[in-house]
Length: 179
Ligand code: ADP
Image (cartoon, rainbow, N blue to C red):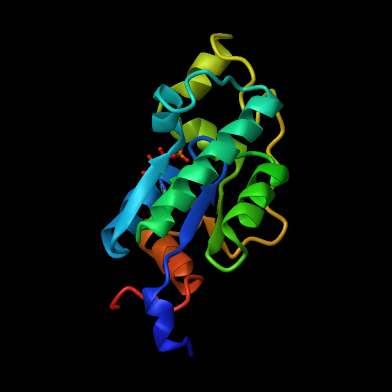
């Protein structure tokens, strides 16, 4: 049983996983059931806040740091924050956990085998990788480090979006789909 005060706390739900694993899809679905909530999408942030950064490891770490800092401001302003970002290294996620604090940080591993992500290819990126148009792609040229102890794991190749949302909500103290 969670404490009644849990429902007033704000959480940072950090969706990490390969491109095509389902982060954006789950972020949008979660945004419908968490309130008040706001999505920080890695691709969107790269168009503005992070447009000076590339895809080398140190740049990805800086992307994570900035995303965490923005999330922190939004938490303070009273929002639940849903981050959708490949954030491939444990170091990235750990630095955010340290920065926002252990308690509000809900790390969600959006798990899906690379082969299925490639088949889905929702943004056509794997096709571009194959054509040699994109370098430094996570899962192909660069490593993806699986979370070691995430608060939730969503195997999107095995479970529906609704089932994944249930898994995530179960990891957020004081939240369920009815609440
Ligand atoms: P990402 O943001 O991780 O790159 P997207 O959410 O853009 O991934 O794309 C994931 C694709 O997989 C979508 O076409 C989505 O409909 C599909 N999909 C199938 N099952 C699931 C699931 N359980 N959760 C999330 N996405 C799923």
